[in-house]
Length: 256
Ligand code: G
Ligand code: G
Ligand code: MN
Ligand code: NA
Image (cartoon, rainbow, N blue to C red; front, side, top):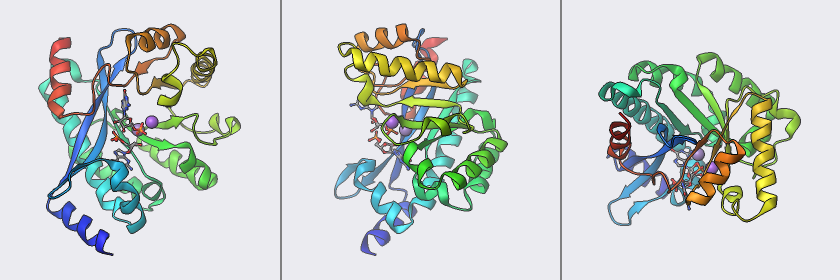
């Protein structure tokens, strides 16, 4: 209860912030989008990452208004990038959903309002969900995914390969993007097993018409290997850490 009060107040007092990590095209390394990643600028404890407060927010239910705030903030930021950069018309924004947000009955309404109020195209927004969120209640999950897809937003499976989603479900899901977890990227230069795994996921993506995005790319060697395998896009410290919106603005300007 204490936790809820403190986080509620933090939300009211605007102590949360959104950082943005660039997503780049694998071949050209040009920025094609960004992932919104929430932080809590705590007045005493300093800047806190999601691992320090998302679980608490999930347990108390505050994740719903917090997630709504992140979503609205991210959509507004995307609109601003698109306004300020002539070449950014196709830029995309990725926003993470938590399990409770995904189950929340007002989700579709919240997403609709966030898109409309920001004035962005619905296809410019990708919502990230994890395999475990899907498998908790697959029938309801499929229904929610279809409702979101009808709005025109895109859907990504985050941390792919770490959960338990069955391959037989994957082809039924209206999913646009597979995000390959960092744990498969770390050793991809040296571990032939990881190469085979990433190669299989990329092939799966091609067969099912889903874009593949490698996460946690830190070295040129990883990048070159992933590019050779045919992964479409990448995210990682090599291209940019989660940072201020101005980092993405600079990348957009450098590309024109
Ligand atoms: O950079 P990083 O420490 O931000 O993110 C850690 C984890 O927190 C990731 O798994 C990410 O999906 C999750 N996360 C980051 N931002 C959000 C958010 O706005 N909502 C939810 N539900 N999860 C987030
Ligand atoms: O689970 P999800 O993919 O939403 O969260 C992304 C997480 O990965 C965030 O915590 C983000 O800060 C982190 N991250 C992104 N790129 C890199 C990277 O290149 N190396 C490491 N170690 N972490 C990364
Ligand atoms: Mn994510
Ligand atoms: Na991930």
